[in-house]
Image 1 (tube, one colour):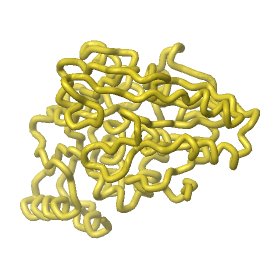
Image 2 (spheres, one colour):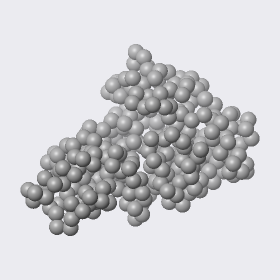
Image 3 (tube, one colour):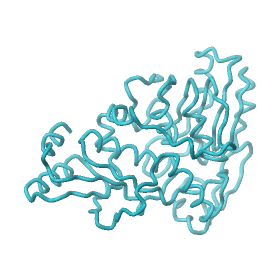
Image 4 (tube, helix red, strand yellow):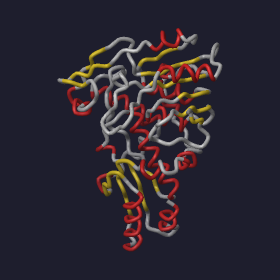
Length: 316
């Protein structure tokens, strides 16, 4: 990375990064993480980052929108909040698509740019392999970054919690998704043990989850069925999602918890970013919230594939 920054130099022709939003189909947390990872890499290399608005996310069963048009209206708000809506007139079609940006092809592109004395404009699908090697790059890039909270409506705001938990279930049953080696899902006992350790009784605790209380069958939007192919529990256009009554599980352990199932994703993000203690899940939504929550104690889960910042508390 230092070598890349050295070869770019102060007098190198202009280099620009932007996320390839046209090619991305994923959840909101993953889409935002891709933007922030590339923004952070650009900051480290001292090159330009152009925010390219998020154009599509996967619609999940408990989102507060159910069709493509509603999704686009929601993304209007999300892009404003995360400042991904500028500039509107930028011509991204002139940029070079590079897919997954790795250190080797980045170095090669920089060298070619220097030799030819040309501008280098890259449309990048993701840069995790570079940024995850040194996650402190995030911390340095996001020091002066703030959300555009002026764009948030009153009904999207919520009172700050002492402790926020993100419980990412997916289809349930500790399912392992395509391309992953372990389940995203953590056992509820993991969170209960942490709450005991934090002496959380009497504190305001909010848990955000995608887990329904009872088992449900969900039919994805017709235009997004391809996003669910290979997902555990998906068959003949319907995905079965296992139920889990987290409020009752935590109550039996002695904790009174407000459980928020799905709903407005902006409300969820703001809740996770504003709390005093954040207990993460193995999820990009958790990870982004942890990056943007500058004041909380962050409890980072074991065996998560995106590495923690130095200040986060790694749970054994």
